Length: 219
Figure 1 (cartoon, rainbow, N blue to C red):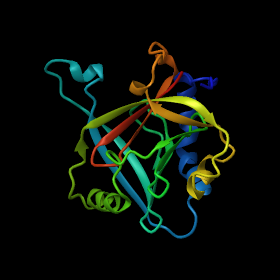
Figure 2: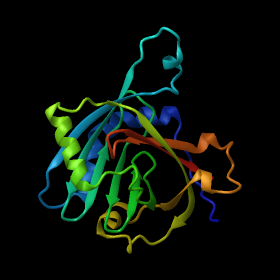
Figure 3: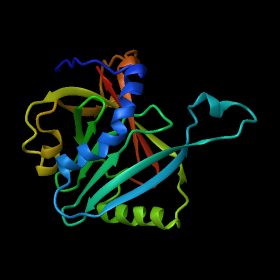
Figure 4: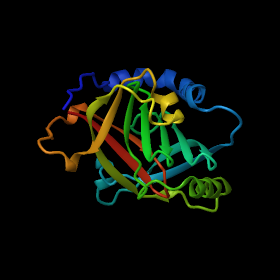
């Protein structure tokens, strides 16, 4: 197993980067992977975070955290490109995400770390491009109540990928010249150091009618 060595940003670093990233995130993503004419969909969902201490207070009013996305969904290419901007009210990272149904791969570009993380596409939580178009249409029309729940996935970066040229043009454009790592579910790994919680970060996004909190850890 290849050892991974890079630093995890502190809360102070994230707070400083947040100011600049708000204006930069969308431009960066689109310059890399959005080419030609396409329709950009926008949507927002809110979820109740049961793990937040404030929501565990008896008698307290529950509050919902928002997750905002922009999406370039290309049914002809069987691909969905999601742009998750810097969140205003949570500690998750901004990201560009590609779900490539032709290649059966998902790629996360963490825009704080500048690294790509790749794994097989999980079709049990990621809607097809056609269904995602319908979902964003409902969100835009107000016909869909965007208060939902969260599904958590716990992933580990297990090895570096040196060549991403065989992963399709979209993932190549996103991850070329960036450090790229293969992801695996933590519950499938033997001997993973569960105490290394200070080397984890998360991305919140909605590839379905619910929020997915993707936690990525360095071993």
